[in-house]
Amino acid sequence: MHILMTADTVGGVWTYTRELVSGLLRRAHRVTLVSLGKLPCRSQISWMDGLPNLDYRPTPFALEWMQDSEDDIKMSLKYLENLVDEVKPDLLHLNQYAYGTLNVPVAKIVVAHSEVVSWWIAVHGQEPPVTEWSTWYRDLVTSGVSGADAVVAPSRWMMSAIETHYVRPATSTVIYNGRNPLLFDPNAEKHNRVISVGRIWDQAKQASLLTQQPHPVPVWIVGNQEHPEKLMNGYTAGTAIPNITFCGVQSEDEIRTLFAHAAIYAATSRYEPFGLAPVEAALSRCAVVANDIPSFREIWADVAYYFEANDPASLAAAIRTLAANNKLRQEYSDRAYERARNRFSANRMIDAYEQLYGAFVSQEAAA
Image (cartoon, rainbow, N blue to C red; front, side):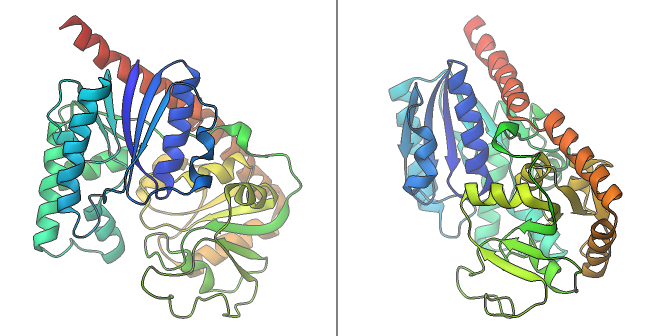
């Protein structure tokens, strides 16, 4: 099977793409991969080295959620239509909504990783203001979802957001994201330490919750502290907050080492359609302390230790409880590890996509 896939190089979507593409290639499929947004650095594409049957096409086209991206979307649509005509894939796997509108003779699967309206509501507590851009964006997402042969979401919560704020897809399914458990070390020596991964300035990740209360154990926060336009006031590297260490941006190998030796992972996001970092921490046998939001409840059920939604005092209390109780902490770490291995493995994700792809390719072959 030959799949043409689009993906952006920013954040978790690129990690998801790497897992999926690598797995599909190992299973003897062909992939033409088009990246969008910022052109990747060498370290972001080193995983492609030596992979057979991969045709990689990096592009700098702006992403649909970016301001002033209208012209780039038009150009990228034309680019993709020409590319489909050139490489003749069996199916399109599109990690952006806009490309559900492509006028091509093959099935289009659109994956709904996140979107602006539900993000805005989670962060600001109300619908975004109506502007020329927001109207354009909503129309674009609605058209893309309507034009897709199938829409995939990484959680039921995310699919509900699409149906609530845009339109109900003709065909929809939920496929949870996955990671390869072999990449993580669940047996390393643990230290009574909390780790969290998230940009300090990002209101959706709200790692800053960890800085608002004292903690009895070290808390390490991994992520960019520099806002695209300014530093977040009060949370720069020079700020002295007891027991808080700002680790800055770390490589994937460095983050895996931090996960391996931390006892607790703090999932602080107020908006998280799935969340790969908590899965990676769980595969490293960290106990997961999670914000009590619907998507985390869906993903982690009763194996996470929840704190009251967006409440820094409740988060601090949860950390104190687990830090002080070795038996309870071990129980939660083991439960998170087993759930991540059983439900959020890369192989399980790839199996589900293969089954979905096969159904559409078989329909086209029979037509």
